[in-house]
Image (tube, rainbow, N blue to C red; front, side, top):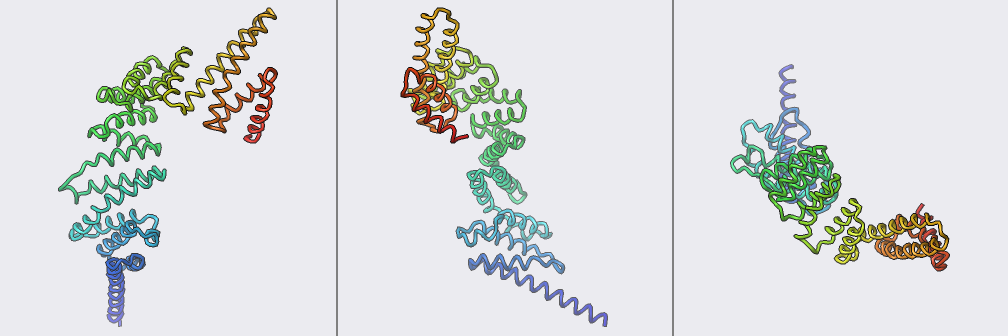
Length: 389
């Protein structure tokens, strides 16, 4: 009786194994005929039962099915899984793990070869969608696949993917990873000045300032005529409190690209830091000649003119003689009035720029006695500001 029981159990086990293998075979057939939904249903069912057997081919088929889901242009199939590519990759890894005789290496390699552009495309889509952490993971999957033993006969150093992984890591604020990949890009001479500039930037963000400066200067030595490299050096010294050094690099940048208004704007900001206001005004005006829609230059220029008027007003308030005071005050009010067009133009570019609205409100109110028409403008600005609160 016991032998009969064992026989029955054995037959049931064999029957179960056969049924599951049939599901796997069915999944492959459905896939061949383009019925991806049916293939997914069959493989999901067939691969669940492993009590009787662990079959490497089942995972190969699962990988193919899920890879086809990812590659399908049809939304009905594409939406069958929101993580199809990673599921496919794990299935191939499991297939290789179970494949003790090495029979599955060749078919898995064929699929993995296609997974490289698959993961690359996924990474680009994730990056463009703003999901930088996921994009980094996808770029890293490309590098992981390319390093697999099955590709050792034709090794690849994918510098483009390394650089893009660095960019994704930088955007995701994963600075250690960004440093890792940018350093690899620099080692393989990929990305030119941009690799050095980005590496210096993430080193600085990771509180490695000394090393950041080293790469900035190394990049400048290699690419002295690259505006990207110059901009990073300029920003470093301007933000780091060494404006004179920034001036040297700004002059080089202007010499390389004299029609780039942003360089003149930057020099205007530099002159503000060194208290050379007349030179700052000159630079902002030059920037606006090149780009009349340069919001920052226009705003900074208006602010400089306003501060000059305020400083003059303070001087006038110290005048004791009433006649001289009244004459000087008229000059101050004329200076205030001359400031108005700057901030009105700013608001033409950005109608809800709050600081400009507040400034104009104060100027309109200050000048309302001599210019009664400004009271109407004051009321309009005040009403707008009230709505914004």
